[in-house]
Image (cartoon, rainbow, N blue to C red):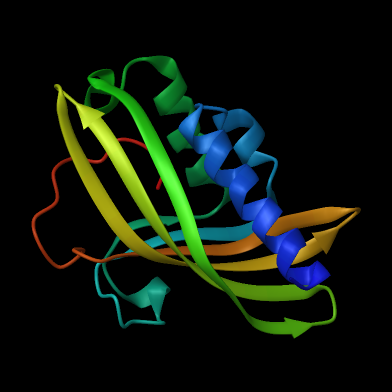
Length: 157
């Protein structure tokens, strides 16, 4: 495994672990200030700013989302006991100086009201080197079933 691939894999694993263990404030620190978190409805679109998305979060909206999740006031998260993410099939798509674009598959298992649901997705990360690690410039979560009815997802994918 190349050093770059191993570094990117370690970063993506860290991010998934933070989300599974509700370390949302620490997760915010993984972002560049101008970074964008996107969960598009249309799996094929690249024009996220001009299409409908489940999430299109810049810094302020990410902070508001985290505040809501940590407040206990988010009804959609009150009955979510736990999420578990499994990341695989990592591929480096491009590297340009300090910026790396990578794609992986991710399966998110959610336990809500005693019902286990899974959400498979293709996730694309655009990462920028920062110190001895990376920060996210963009994270795009393309849910496999995004064009179908989704029950309320009250956590960060």
